[in-house]
Amino acid sequence: MSDGSRAVFSALDNAKTQLYHFKAIVIAGMGFFTDAYDLFCITAVTKLLGRLYYYDPAKDAPGKLPTNINNAITGVALCGTLAGQLFFGWLGDKLGRKKVYGITLVTMVGCALASGFSFGSTATSVVGSLCFFRFWLGFGIGGDYPLSAVIMSEYANQKTRGAFVAAVFAMQGVGILFAGAVSTIVSKSFAAAFPAPPFSKGNVLSTQPQADFAWRIVLMFGAVPAALTYYWRMKMPETARYTALVEGNHKKAANDMAKVLEQDITIDEATSKAPVSPNSSYGLFSQEFLRTHGTQLLGTASTWFLLDIAFYSLNLTQKDVYPAAGLINKASSMNALEEMYHLSKAMSLIALVAIVPGYWFSVFLVDRIGRFIIQLGGFLLMSVFMAILGFKYGYLRGEKEFCGPGSKKDFCGGHPIMFTVLYGLTFFFANFGPNSTTFIVPAELFPARFRSTCHGISAASGKAGAIIGAFVVQYYTQNGDSNGIKKAIIGLSVVNLIGFFFTFLVPETKGKSLEELSGEDQEMGKTAEVTGGRNYRTDAGPESEMV
Image (cartoon, rainbow, N blue to C red; front, top):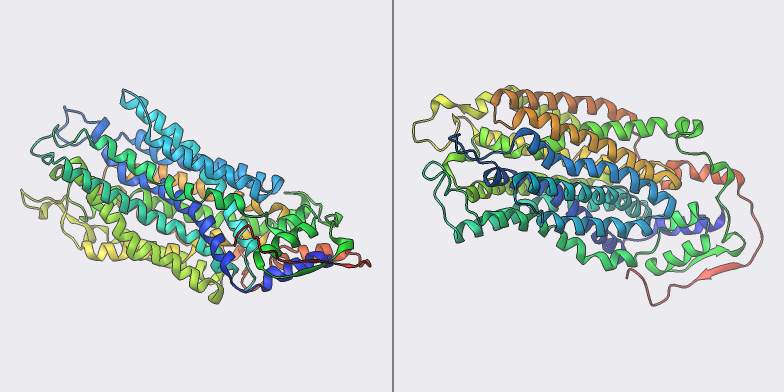
């Protein structure tokens, strides 16, 4: 590795934690806030969409989305996310992280707003336009995964790199919490302004026409925080590691980092425009790449795939699991907005006490106990808690015959508090576990020229698992069939156990530099030439693009 690279990377790895680190977390994190909000707020409004657009007077039950429509609405954004992760991950390595970063944000904000304006005079046209905009929303969201992870990883210092990347990802938990909270506030406000009888006392009148505005407001709100960060995202300099290792411009890398680090970086002017080492020119999926990084990519992709089958299934099926478990009253005892309110409130409660704390436990402990232990323990405990939920589902849920004629519950005599605790612990150890580490590790293991692409491949594997959750697992849960839900939960327990074993393919990355992990220090060291020349000194000017 040239002296220019060493100076820049040493400054980055040894930099003390300062303001620019926290600004980078907020700037990248707001994208993830929008990602999570937009992907999970749909869970809070799908039952309302069913009541609004798919009520059948011939049936003595509230309107409900057909299985294929429900799966399409919840799953189409995941399909777009998968495509975006692959495309923008590749583009981030070709054009640079900064150039692509703004495109993903504009796509997310624009399509989030457009989702709320889904037009049409029939249910089919409204759902069709909603699915169209949500696909492209997912496409933009997909790009944010590899770019945010890689940018934060390449900005961070060596000692706290895991915590910084985990903090960016922890904004996903805040987004999930806000999705539930905004849905709760909007539905409660509309319900208070437009009262209506429960379905059992007025089937048609129980669905307020004004509710058609409620779900649109919820979908559109997620665009606001991300839009506010656009200016700062465009002011971020390109990461020094990309500039030095991929573009080969050490002088520019030193200049950029001197501004944000507020310190002098001295490099050898003779090597300030050094080319990338020819020994580092092997391509993606070449024999050399597969030999050095193939097992690692298999490990990061497979564990993310298995994790997201369970994680997204848990999130997307909340609307089906909570009523069946007795946490929410049966649909016929509520009007449309009341049902949305109680579902959103339950989502917010689980997010507040289980989901969000799990993320921040990862932030505070990932650089202390390591990624490997957190991921291994998370998969194992998820498997245990889901196995208990599955095998004891009838005991926890209760039975219909225990309900009196005027009961507002579908099942009675169960143990909803115990169910909530076990369900919440599953979420907690997903986030203080593989949901955080599968995001962190792919941003650390691979060479700079492949880092964004490999993170995109790993993340896309995860979304393939999420699509299975949306289109396969929901098939067993949507009708509220207790036997189907039981089978789904037990199946997810097995999936988590498989993830436990695949974790052994992923090495520990704690406490090592990105160049040491990727092997770039050895590759470049083989061909580095020590040349004479006067030193080039960069002085951190008063103007800084991030501070």
